[in-house]
Image (cartoon, rainbow, N blue to C red; front, side, top):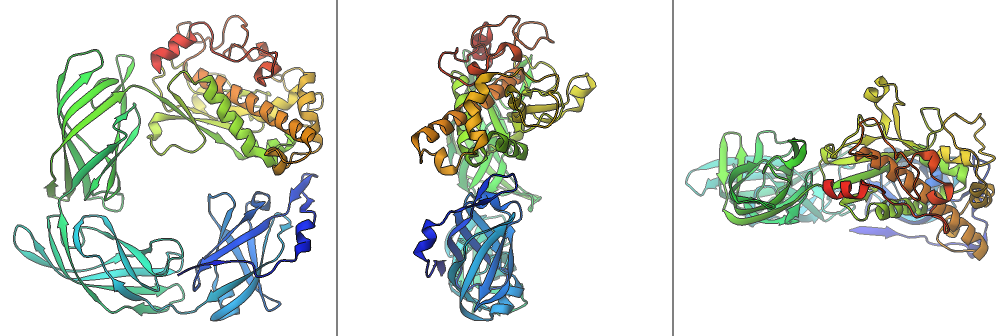
Length: 616
């Protein structure tokens, strides 16, 4: 059973208190607040405790949770890695379990970190030192290899709490005749975090063999807690018939170079922990290139294994005759029509599934860009007074870049792509100070001028030794802290570097108020005094636009601009044009970069639009 543990009482007067504290940068930090605490029922040593609330970013990189009971400390829990905003995970230690003892408790917990502390949160917590396992329902009937099957019982534990396995014992009878004994244990995991009653098992080829057949026998659950306590359920009988692999669908039914397409089906094999197993898909039919004549086609795809019901079809790009094409088909655009057949392999055994009609459309090149914000970016936002509204700034950056490249097949993403191979998307890093030490706004440190965009995988960021060998700055990316040099008072404690701009009064007009009094989260979403909210919004939009335009400019270099049909060592426009993105940095007014009224809107000039039409 899953238990949501809620506060038992809260003094109403606390709601009226000032919820800010001094911070290390001389400003104010918002006090973290616990809204909800979740734990399995019951909890054991190693159980995860989930805390949800507000203001967790200010706790730093090492938050911890103090646990008190009956006025005495039961111990401290330390944070575990987690990537969900507004949530922290802690592992229940043996020390705290021992201090509390087996039973139901009312505890007081407090979040701490970076010199900050939340108010106490009162919660009920059930703790046990032993957890008997039981089994009520087991999988049965028709199945495929690597199906995820559910067992129902009691005492299901997660990986931090111990080990849980399902022991299969019986006989495997092949459809083609013959049989073999089975005695194998497979790992069991909770169906959902904190679920004590439902677990999942992957039905691997260890139950019998690859060939179709039927397992008849029993299933028994066996558990061992991290404390050393062991438990075993009573056996349950079952019968499972395993079928050959099947293909169901391709999602999406069309794709661009470098894309990973999801192939759905059943009975797929593979994975790094099963090196002797793999899945193939045999294609037979014809490929019709765009504007060309049909060509007979026969070949095999070796997809990437995800699970028993999903593999990924990678449209691998390849350079042929100075152009990108799909290595499988030899063209960038066109359509395949024919059949597809799944084939699974386990060592020397091979099993062929049913053949189905199959159609796929190849739609050419698309540039996917992963914009990665580095820790230095968030540190530098403090100097702008915008560190608590970082997410609002990021949204403007994404909107600005998407608008600039909106007429072409360019996707700007702030999450690492899962539907692209790493060789098929670029990374652009947005950081704080310029590590080259010259005050650059940004720098494309990828090697050479990639005319034709033959590299879909550029990394605009980090250090590039090849670029350094050519005598150019080695560190690439976008350097937000350099924007402060537009201010009469950058506040960076050093002389202006040679690459920095001259001060522009417009910068201090926009940012002076929020630099003097940093924006709060509520102001960032429009709550508060209207004049103050407007000033905060203007600063967010201005900085987001500068970052977005600078990022778009560096991406333009990566795509082969400016002057893609000009000299290979010329990277900017020869002449200044109103709103031209690929002008030299000194030719672009600050108001234009901020996307303010009265200034030219940013766009691609000269032959850049036709070039982008050609490559994207």
